View (tube, rainbow, N blue to C red):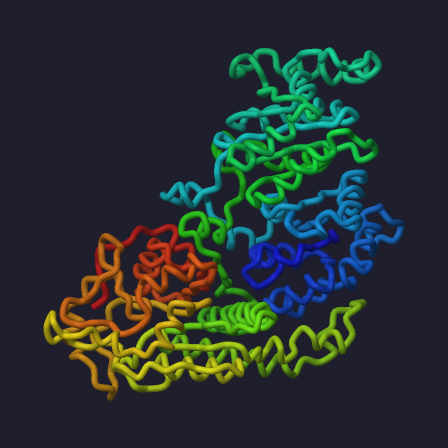
Length: 630
């Protein structure tokens, strides 16, 4: 299969963007097929560390300088099989002017004419890819998916068809196809909680002959109309109707459906379009299409063949109402509202341990995210603020980023995919110093100097090293991370923190931390409270992230009675997500970190989770235990 993998600029910008999240979630499936994309998408994919050494990913040039034309031509069932395009995944941003350029509209039109899937929303792409991956019988599918019945939390599961609404819309020349689709997949459509349709299409689906249909058109529809009526006999229908009929398209029916989409009351749209006829209500049609694209959780299918293929694969199973495959990454997002970067610890490539693979994935994502933010800010003359916590794991993460920089700086021509239009000069634009060492970055510690003075674990030292890698500058917090409270009247030690550090915490764009259960001791030389006494106060918590302890069982922040933490506040952490920044939790396979990691995710303060696939499954499957590590 040959798949075009495309996205508007905003939807591909950065490793956490919709296009790259989709590519990451389905990398094992997509790697089995030939992939064609534009230069901009190719750069974004490579900068996120995806499809490394995969020579089946090819760039065809700048999108609006001919690449989309070449891809559209490939949809035309070319005699040259090596150029034929079977599927177009094009995540379209309706706010981007290019979404309405002739190249974009022509590509979609050719897909509809030649009945090739044109998947313009994240959910359309994910559902299509999940069923294709499942039906391949690949072992990787089982690794990266879950049995929904094994989950106790319904919020993690996909919405069953019995709680979704499907909209059925067909232009005049496509109404016969809609009737045949409804007859062939009646059980699938009846599995939805409700069905809505625009005027004439709805009347036909409900077994009525619309008065406005000319006699010759009715004759063409009579056979599929009667076949559907036969299939309906004896079935229990709400109010005796198969669909709820809205206004006709020219009278506002498309707008009514668009309004339901915006309100979250319609999740699937089958819109069989006739691209050969101009219509008076073309603006309403475009409004419905753009609304569907604006809601990434909506499935939009544009032709009879693609709709039938999807319905056939998605046949409702009485034993599995959640028939839509559930990816681990999707379950994490739905239960904890995090973007998941998951690695397969048992992957055959290389001999790296699961933790080493987590570090590698984290290095790619963080370097790419910082670079993207820095590039955007540099245009405005501003800096990116990164805050990093302490610990051996984060030191190893920064070292992995340094190794990645060295590796990318030494890329050779033999890494180029065959037949790519990217020559060496343009190749260097992918991994040049603007990406590797952006410069306009300020890195600060999440908390003061810990009881361990070793630079291998100390937040100030880690911040300095990360700033050095990025050619940025570092802030330093010289106060001890924990200070004893001598009395209620004693001034808070946080008041002694200089203003630049406070400003940095309040304006942080990216927070990087890990987590740990309560520790009995922190060996080191820096003066700090007696950690034996400190442990006595925190031992019954789940643990901490960056020195912020999570109380059990309520999952709220716990503040030791006799000691004050000197560092970024919990309120500062919460504000990062509120301002559109990212909070990243990096955690490995260690069983003792499971409870604290899950407690942090339940707090909702983390937006990104980087971990191993097996650890992620345990986060989803096991409830918090009542024990704690000594």
